[in-house]
Length: 232
Image 1 (spheres, rainbow, N blue to C red):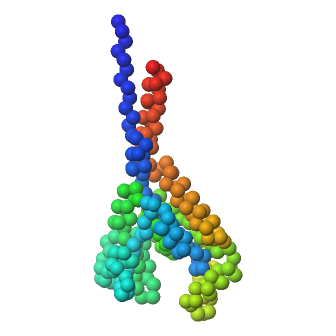
Image 2: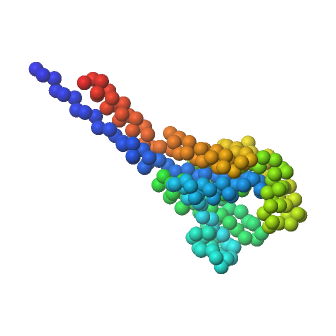
Image 3: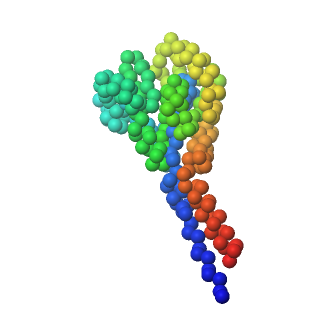
């Protein structure tokens, strides 16, 4: 009596599905003033596919060139407090009498869809994100190569008086002490090299197995197919 052929195991998940079902991440860049963080952020947005900038909400009045939903989501102070008290914000801060925050819903929607979100925020904002969604956050602390270089960059902007620059440098003292709480540290001595370091972190973190719900079934399917091939 002939043996009944064993049915061929179907691959559970395809390679394309592994990519499609990846959970996105929250890439956070922080730094003291004059380290070049915002320049690196701009380069990432221009060159790296699948990365989008987190759009903050603010109570600050809209400037003539700004578009609602593009530069910020402009809201009233009353609406801001409703969002804060209702748990709709991931992080928030008051700056010069105006409020700024990261809305929770669009960020959660993006990362659940496999899209990556870039945050150009300060240390306090980063630590608030840690409290809400630490497993989704990849944080990078960007440093200048020296204090002299930082001072030179701040002066080179031509935007602030010496007293303001001094205050920024004093603030940097406290900020730098928190470097140990970041996942990665990049020294921005040569801009292109610092950018490549940040991009390398992003690309490596995208392949972290914990972010892929489909990688387990994909490998199980391959193992099953391989075992069938070996069994003949």
